[in-house]
Image 1 (tube, rainbow, N blue to C red):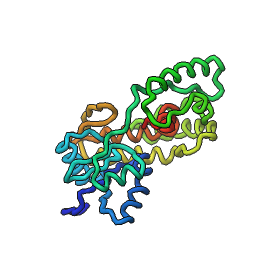
Image 2: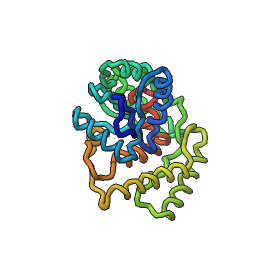
Image 3: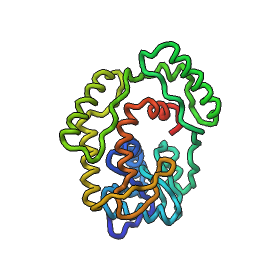
Image 4: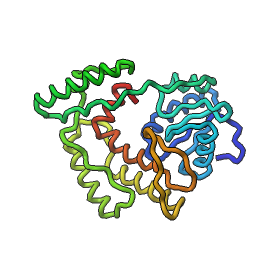
Length: 256
């Protein structure tokens, strides 16, 4: 990061943030179109401090991806499509996307009984009716036609795992991944473990004793000199986002 950046447009990213990776090609396109946008990884202390200063200045709560005009405070929290990012670049104030009243019911596993599916359909149809304000809602049949896991994925690892524990978790995860190879886009265990170890190493460099951060609505309030627990949860959600049916469903429903 430059000591005296001239651009007021910032795109904050973090290690293991799947939605940051989705947004980056669109930001690159906007940059190639002549827009001055600075990409900042909050793994670097200066970038993280700048992000926290802007969050405090404009009373914002956001993890990553985070897009902000430092002069006006106009910002976007989370992934949005390019047409929305283009409006932000042009100086428009972007309202937050509509939010669901709550998470949709968890779809049944592939191979579930007809009774289980019928029970889920009733619960989902009720949820969809209560969330008709959301765009691009899928019908219950469309959701059932989507690829679904045959079994639950193993619980994500913890940052303080030993190498042996990571190895054991990786074996369980790869076994689950092989059994559910009909689900596309799942990360290999080595990549997930690498992300966790990187975050653990970065946290160890920043603090001696980590402190708990308050998570509000899935987004953390900024506090200096502590491990960024939001980034930790983002890494954990990398597993769940790809393997857990609820998160996959939210993405397809347009609820995220």
